[in-house]
Amino acid sequence: MEDQNTKIANLQVFISDKCSEREKEIIKFYWEFKENEIVNSPKQVLTAFSLRSSYELSKIIKTHSELSCYLFCEYCTSYEIQKIYSNSRYNEIKKSQRSYYRTFKCSNCKEIQDEKDKKAKKEAHQLFLQKFDQALKKKNWNNLNQFEREVLSSCLEMPFDQLKKKYGGQLGRENFIKLIKALEKISDQDLIHLVRNRSDNYIASYQYLQRLTEFIDEIKPPKKISPSYVQTDVDTNELKFKLTINENQYHPDSPLHAGTVTFKERIVIEPGVEYIFGLWNRANENLYLTMTPLENLEKAPQTKRISSQPKSIRQVMIDYLNSLGAD
Image 1 (spheres, one colour):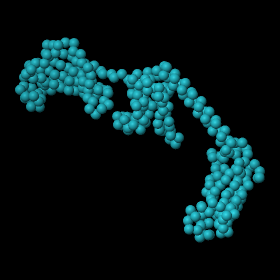
Image 2 (cartoon, rainbow, N blue to C red):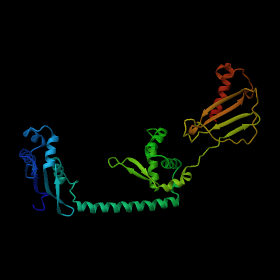
Image 3 (tube, helix red, strand yellow):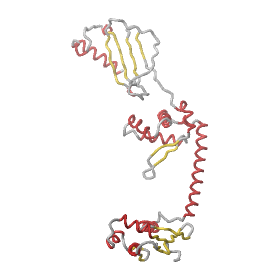
Image 4 (tube, rainbow, N blue to C red):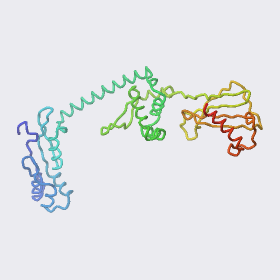
């Protein structure tokens, strides 16, 4: 055995008695070493013995030979025997022994490390269960905003790939970060566990306990239907109507504007009366609609489009509509 500073010791090649003399020569040439370094490459062996393929060489080596050596484990500072059946595998071991990040670990140390990893994983899982239980008791979804609660309820109904597709279409590429931040906020509340890629730390999936689905109806945010604002002028029968944007457009057939209306006074729409109407954009994509009988303008043009009205009437109507829009 070599001294402890040598990471690879006692290289020995065993050759089967059942192989031919030519095969023995091939094996010896294949496993020729100089200072623990392999001398001949597989290509050189193929050329030197006129072998037809790498498969033929590999079959001879694995069937009739074995390389044994002792590798030094820095964790327990002892050697462990290894059986090797190709020089490519030997070169991998040599490379790992020289690497700072890929230090050889013997089977006993691996077993000890595996037990530690299992224990740490079990403890982490127990901690997650405790946090999750507290999150349920405190109803941590109430700490989320409406969008985050929508995302959480969607997480309980579909896998991550479908979730990305759903919100990717709704938010667009520029606003997709909104979904990522929502998932991180939900994770901070101990309601889900985010699984990330090791390479780039991107979210790959999420996990949650099945018990959470029992609260999905409570988690889903209440549907807020903003009441539309209506004003009526009893004397002139003018109607002013705010069309609020529909915040729950989850289906292609959903209306762009929706809400509820409560009329505090009786509104009379007379048949045969011609009205002038206008529609304006307002904040948050809301619309503002007005309807006014033409007779209230003290002039009653016969045509319906402003552009076809007499010039004098047209300007009066335009000025009137502009003044409403300014208000």
